[in-house]
Amino acid sequence: MIRLQNIEKVYRTSAIETLALNSISLDIAKGEFLSVMGPSGCGKSTLLNIMGLLDAPTKGDIKIDEQRTDHFSDKQLAQFRNRKLGFVFQSYHLINDLKVLDNVELPLLYRTSSGNERKKLASAALEKVGLSNRVKHFPSQLSGGQKQRVAIARAIVGRPEIILADEPTGNLDSAMGSEIMDILLQLNATDNTTIIMVTHDEYMASKTHRLVRLFDGVLVQ
Image: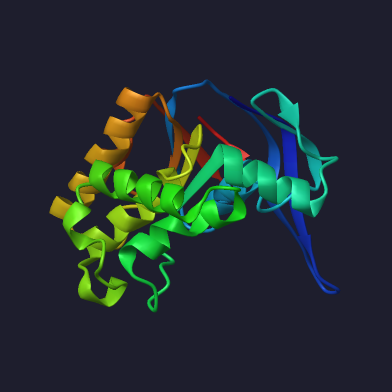
């Protein structure tokens, strides 16, 4: 589903050059649940951003579902991301002025879905994460675990084939973190969703199919 070949990412300023990723080659199969671990600053989020087409590598090739994306325009990249990818972040990134249902609908605004269809799909996504009774609430009325469930519902509302999760349990206590992890495992098992998760938690990583480690921008396992 995702193939990275000799990926390198360099950040340059007038005074310094930083090698964030160095010669990363990695294949991720359809339906795989992969964990990425490593110390802070080792390049985990950079790698996830490149997989998610939010950033471009300095060198190397990336294919998603056998498609190269390096020739895409910004508009084509946005459309491809909207169709293929779902994102879950540590800090939720919900819009506080929008109700839960409206937050979940957001990715569908970039499609040709009708208003009724958007609400139907958003309601189904919220039911899948156990929040059908919170559709009219605002994010400020939710717990951290509930906010992350809304974020997952938003990520899956467009039925993406891939979910990229950056520390999805990082801001939660162990009980809430386990609930979020169970939702991700269920999505992987029942919908065959490919999931790549960056985490610092060895226990959460142990529940996934495979673990790779980064150290100073290099894949070490």
